[in-house]
Image (cartoon, rainbow, N blue to C red; front, side, top):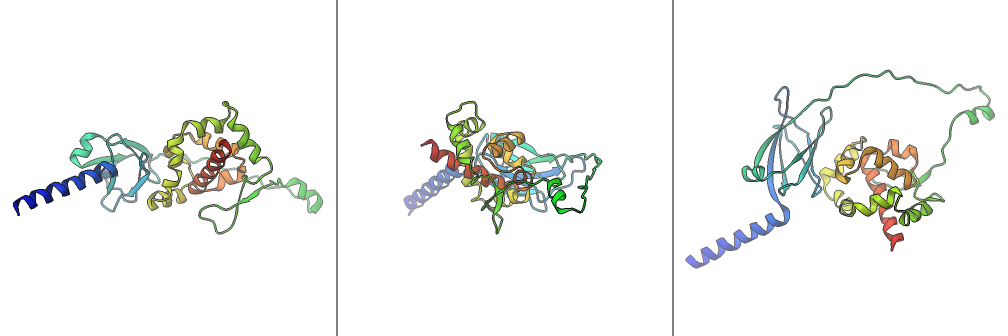
Length: 254
């Protein structure tokens, strides 16, 4: 019986060790306002390395699996987003306190410029700008959304980038294979998926893919998505669009 108890203890220890090695350690964090000290609930925390997410509760506490040196992207509406490195001390102590700083907003003057119409259909139709858009099935929308994958020159632009080292898509798709392979994984975590569906600032995408916001817009342009789509789509739809373009790129490259 004694030997069985020792064997059982060793077996359980090995199981926990294997799970921890595969999934990381469960770390805890408490998020506060750096000025008032108030606990912040509803804060979004994403492990950029594992693409897993969590949300802080009404006591500002969150729990998330992580490895040492993983990067956590922490964001909340009205606060400056930050990146925090998971240290060995954090893993050892299991918990740490993180402070967020409120954003200072400056109100800017907004000028609305209406179209000056004449009342004559033939003339007014030429005064109002029009765009030639294409339809695309994408996450979060019941109907097709305008985009550029099926436009006449979309195939040529993606194909051309494969043989042009100076092209934006060549550099992006060729130098970030790990980040792009995680695109599908991002949608498996409900916290990450819901966060992306609720945001339009490209900040989280920028953190997850390691590119700037301007580069995201350029990638969309190179994939032939319309300017209207890029400006109005949420982050999940943009992520889906990048994923679709990447899948097309991989097929053509073969």
